[in-house]
Length: 475
Image (cartoon, rainbow, N blue to C red; front, side, top):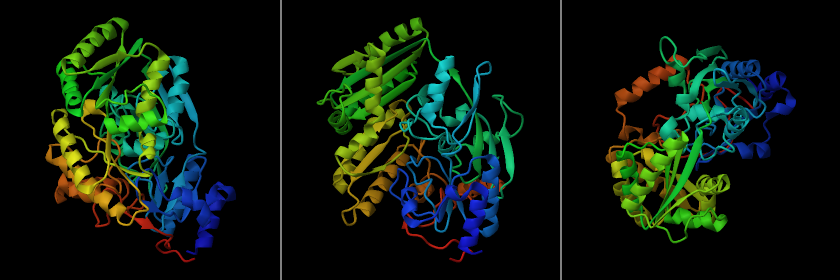
């Protein structure tokens, strides 16, 4: 099929203004929050499930690969277009369709921003619990693709624990429904296997999520420590006492300094590490557990323990944590964020080994992460304009992931595998394991037309592709 004819077909479905294909306009869609680049052949903005279905059917018939794209905040290259692919993006499908307060659920489109849903349902005394650090920008469709987490997932689980059902378009354009509006369904948990499939199984066009009541009481503590080791000891001490906070985050010295340069989050400039601990529940329960948390912090070497005295102070503390990644731009213009998971008891050991990688490769590595569940986010800082910098940083990142795996951990907790970790999959999975995963994908998308080239190793570590012709397409 000729490219112009294909474009005309897309425009006939969604309207001429909702297909982007000029080179300069496509530049903003060639990247996400990772280091990879890939210029799509075109970007399409559908407004309904029917339009998504027809776009996908047209591309499938023309042999053009497709990638669903949320808001581009992903951190593993999941939204990067492979050679010759189009992106299907959802800024026009951003509606909260229904809020059922009695059954505590919401029906939304994939382009709804995570924080917008949470803010909307709080009017009814409810909330949406998963809260990635990119909560102000990331979309629920992208959250489903990557099974996004966030600080409060220690107590409440990741996205998969809050998805009830979804309407999905498969690679041929067929529309199917997975799950239901009930928390439990008979048969295979297809909604569970779809969530976290990184856009390779299908594209969700409607999503039913469960909501939780707003807690009666919330209390936030800041534990200040002289070093990372003592802060890690405090993490284990809190959990060993049978306390599962709503959130338990750690921020190291380099990140603290970057955050405080950008805005005053209330973190001491000279701290070796801080822990941000949040408790939620009934007032009496929070008071009782709060006293135990404070005691555990003092017992493990905290130099100060602060409790937020107002909603404004709590927001200030969390603004520093959620804005940490952007603040690191004051140190270096680029970052490579690794997403390994390790046992809590190995946190101090692994962070020590990460520090050795920093010295070996002569790159700063900042650590801000979900300490409560051992989900590390070493952030490798660099300047991609320097010759060889990207190759150096990717090699260092691979070494960090190997350290996590050798400690009994795994490759990703919430960012997905995508392009950035696919070559490390054999560190955790055998050929038989990966063949089984591919067979599950093939049950949904046997022709691998959706987000091909992701998750499984193929020898390509990172990409900066230009604008190649789509398979079977002439210009």
